[in-house]
Image (cartoon, rainbow, N blue to C red):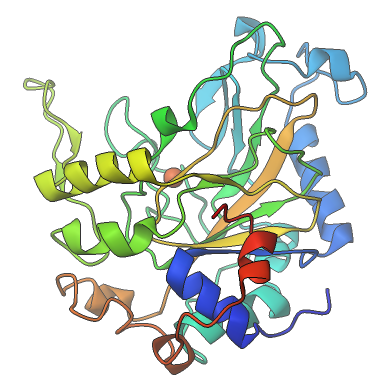
Length: 324
Ligand SMILES: [Fe+2]
């Protein structure tokens, strides 16, 4: 909890690699409250039981599943968004410490503030029929509490590449915070270092993602549309970049850039991956998003970020789990 500002080295690393792991920056009491919110979201009649780890192994049985976009349990994924503007979750991820770090990256007194008891992600349903929920639509708080159930031991480990993606809504910076310890391979959050710099110029718009509208009578084409340059570069990234598993302890956070390739990977541990996710953007994102990708991809970031070079040590990169 001592971190109130990022060091030059941390900023340089974030700029170069597109992510930054911060240890122990979440309030332990509020992490406990977030875990309670997750478990207390369950009705009484479910098979999964908080005090019985044998019931934690996924996937959710049919009888425990539901597809409500603010309170969803399907397969191995458990996403509780209905509490996203509860004061405890706002205070957890928009704390003085994390807002301070976000404003160091995005600019002093520039970041959009959350609204306690405001509207929550998912309250308008999915972005299109059968599609994902848009994290920017009607969202005035964090994204939610996202959990991944452990895979059975018999399940073979899939490649993280299969789930690698960039997000399709406009935002600038995001955070994944662990509210429970998550060991290596436990599905904490996986990132592809440096991919933000390679993909940023391949988008048609600086913050948005082109979308095909959904029509009931023409359902074949829908959802997200990527440029050919994006598809080619993503393929190269997956071939030449070793992903980093951002495992850690309750209280750890990983910040990541909006164009970074990432995945909520499979959980091959014995504990449920329990995380909170939130976005940070400048209040004037509505103006910034009018522009195409810029020659200087850091134009909209703080002078501290703009003036930062790649001056971080090899040992720091190692701490951040970059494999040479
Ligand atoms: Fe994502």
